[in-house]
Amino acid sequence: MAYTEIMTGPEHRAPGLEAATDEDFAPEGEKGTQPVNDDPGQRSIAESFGARAHSRESGDYDVVVEATSRPTGLRPALRALASGGVCTAVGYYLATGTRVPLMRMYATDATLRLGVSHSHALLPDLLDLFHRTGFPAERVTTLEAPWDEAPAAYTARTTKVVLRRDPLTPDTREAP
Image (cartoon, rainbow, N blue to C red; front, side):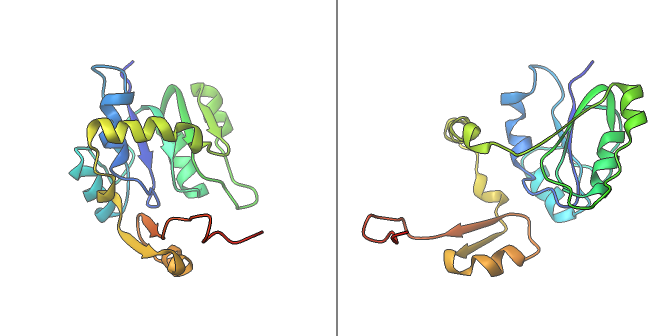
């Protein structure tokens, strides 16, 4: 079985990272990531890194990363799996009664993984990847804002927000 994966959803928020890391994480000689995203701007960012972005899921994928955090993204992500495939949901589903196609998952031996992301554990490897490859992570950033403007920045409908603030020093830290 060829190794293929997709990242789904109009709310997918890191369109270039998966394309840039294919060589490091996909099995050698196999296909890489194919982002699926309804937003042309986000598809353009992913394609600028060499990804083969799509506006709709197509085909049978070994790995699907569902990044919308919405039931309307979860069901198509699970339907896009190949037999024995794994869907990892990186968000959480707030709606009561989120429907999951359990019979289809059973019949295709699909696995759904979800839970809290422990990104801190992966941060050293990710930073090493950026250092080793010169990956321009800043190209994914669509809004940069000062720390004091964080609430407004996070309400903006944009792809990736990066906040700036002065470094904390012992003199500038507030007492609890």
